[in-house]
Length: 286
Image 1 (cartoon, rainbow, N blue to C red):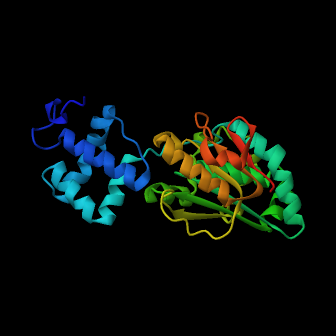
Image 2 (cartoon, one colour; image 1 turned 90 degrees about the vertical axis):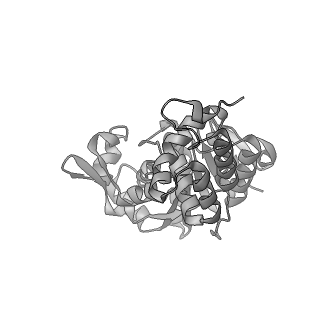
Image 3 (cartoon, rainbow, N blue to C red; image 1 turned 120 degrees about the horizontal axis):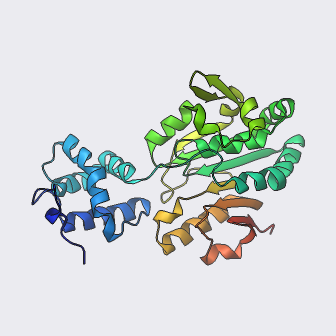
């Protein structure tokens, strides 16, 4: 049984209660599929307390009433509850697999006048987006420039607008890109003092959109590759299965889905997706 948060040190009685935590948990699940276990009561308090103060509300209870009615403020609250932790070339085996098994087919299609469509779903502050695009362009500048002149687009989406702003700025500490293979970072980043910028060639291929994965998806076309990694760890199993099934439907036949190291595909999507490597899945050709 959850102890009433108002009994914890530093929280005045009446400001934040077990009922408030339950209400926030229900909103987070309904709005974004986020599951907040009982042990997250103090995390919720620490993340939302600044918003409660900024709103002029005296208690969490009054703030909850506001976010139920105010979609903009509700979105701010959901963004405050999400974790935007990522880094360049995270789970390197995914990029190595993409380079060896997926990239050649995409280049061949582009050479025939086709297109390449990639989606970084839950892209956070952009490290995954830029890692993937640098891997696509590869270690040869002339070849990479030819690829970039083709019909290539990567959709980078996230529920957190502030994370997308950092991603679109495409500027990072120099130490942040150390995990990227030297052959790629030398070609596709530009030194800027103690920082680096992603090169204009790479940046031209990305489009950034605020998107709640549990809401409507406005995209009309299908994707050759979807990366959705370390996002579904915050969801319960039914929510994960619904989302993965939607990803499977959004892939072209033969398309690829990459998920996080602790995530697995289960449920209806298994009718369309086959395991192709550790946390790598491929849609059937049919």
